[in-house]
Amino acid sequence: IKLAVPKESATGERRVALDPATVKRLVGLGVEVLVQKGAGARAYFPDESFVEAGAHIVGTAAGLLKEADVLLKVQAPTEKEVAGLREGATVIATIMAYRQTEVITLMREHKLTCFAMELIPRISRAQSMDVLSSQAAVAGYKAAIMGADLSSRFFPMLTTAAGTIRPATVLVIGAGVAGLQALATARRLGAIVQGYDVRSAAREQVESLGAKFIELPIKAEGEGGYARELTDEEKAQQADALAAYIAKVDVLITTAAIPGRPSPKIVSQAMAEGMKPGAVIIDLAAEGGGNCELTQPGKTITHGEVIIHGPLNIPSQVPLHASEMYAKNLFAFLQLMLAEGELKPDFEDEVIAKSLLTRDGTITHEPTRALVE
Ligand code: NAD
Image 1: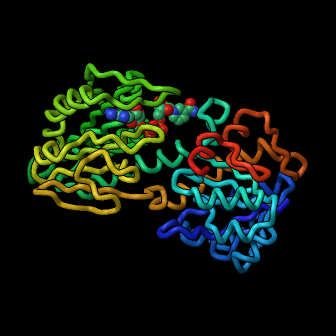
Image 2 (image 1 turned 90 degrees about the vertical axis):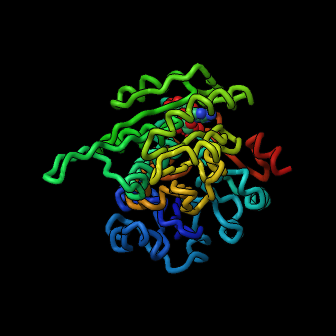
Image 3 (image 1 turned 180 degrees about the vertical axis):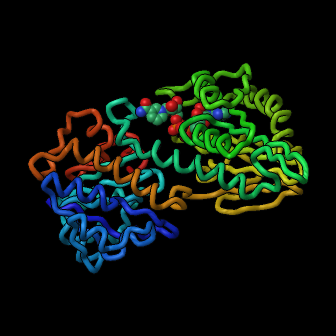
């Protein structure tokens, strides 16, 4: 079969679905890999590196789509891409169904088989395929770097002839995959780090990174290891308790998310106004509206003397490594389905069944079908 990697078309997207090293491994499994000219350029993978790995370069998107048995993408396909594929072809990408109802309808009409990488269940066997984790780790790392960059203070303690500088204090709210990576990175840069989460399991993970865990009485473990939404009363309690911590830190990184819901508003305007002059908020939840009331997704604003940064699509800002990690996730998923150079998915397999979005003219994923129909 022919796997096809197009140039990502979303504005600002610099990642590419496969890197040359993964292409080489796939070719070794007996498949053909087609790469659109320039597809890896923005992640610094030149066309020649794909050719050396055994891929064929195709000049145009239309030419690539016509030949593709399986289209491999970082972001959801566009309507044009779906229309350019032959009926029955397969698409593997991060879809984020709630933003893509029209494309999903079109994939159903074209009888495409679509697997959504973000729907892969987070079970041990599928850890190597978990794009949410790999890309969240990239985002967490970069959030700490952004915080250091926007801060008017040093992160590390410095002892110099011009005196001793005290280290910065960084608080991370939401200690999931991104939050833990932000804590680890800020600590490596020399900051004093604190973490907070509503799941008790986060305590041990935060402490194992050498960070202090902020313990509040509110516990909100939800389903599948995620947090549940807080009640209004819990939200008020949380705000009261957190305000005192937030007022003392130099950099606040927020990453709190609830699956399928807008990001919880944890940092009110008053809490932000109570921060030190020159303090920085990096709101990693900006994509879902933000954890801070003042966040403007995609912008860096100054409110009073506090800088609030709401970055979007952070993994694309570390395109080389983010692409390599994404490609490794794709490889692990493809390996599950490839046999003798053919794609033979076992639709009974939990990982395959749960990530399947459309097939044979139906939307197989229940919540997405409810959204679209
Ligand atoms: P996420 O991106 O959905 O949320 C980020 C964090 O925000 C979570 O830790 C969550 O508890 C926290 N949060 C939500 N509401 C909050 C609030 N009001 N106040 C403070 N914090 C709040 O989460 P994620 O990083 O994708 O992962 C969540 C969980 O899934 C973690 O326990 C993680 O270890 C687990 N996980 C398991 C696997 C696996 O087993 N394969 C893989 C990845 C993640």
